[in-house]
Length: 221
Image (cartoon, rainbow, N blue to C red):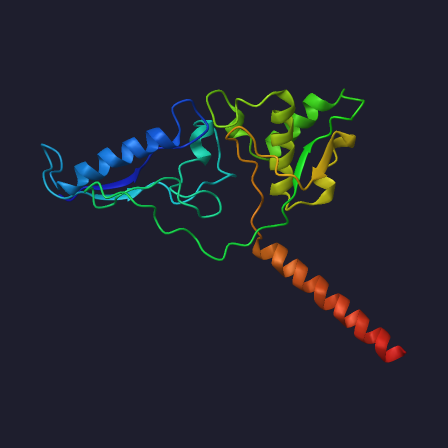
């Protein structure tokens, strides 16, 4: 009877034991085992395996744990996380990443340190995290070392980016502001959202509408 393993992998964030170092160690050992084609004592021979997963999923349910959104071999924008050797021979190299990835403008939503009324801050951060992705802030994760202001900025930015940088998503009653200075710090990445097909379509439609209006005005003149 052939054996097929449907999912095998190691997450890289969202838990104290989920990081790139542990993930690489796991895959190195796993590929060495698979290269031998030994199988198990009861089922010797080749085993077909599906790695889990390809890219991180920022909208995946975290009911099993905050690490659920970080199983990808690639980051959300298609960059390989660490070198690996699928042959199991120890010849590490980075997998080929995605090409031609387009991003939204290089801007971030951060905590406005000049804000005076902070009464809604806790609620706003909770809202941003519930509608965004704050799994990198949990204890032991990549962004847990940020100070309070940094964590607030991270939460606000994740919500802002996941709303395709809608300016209305970076206000929070004056507690947030948009900046063009990269907010990433201390090994914690503040991502910039990739340009989705929907945003492209909207932008193209707006440009076409503007061109049509301009042509109409010229004809009227």
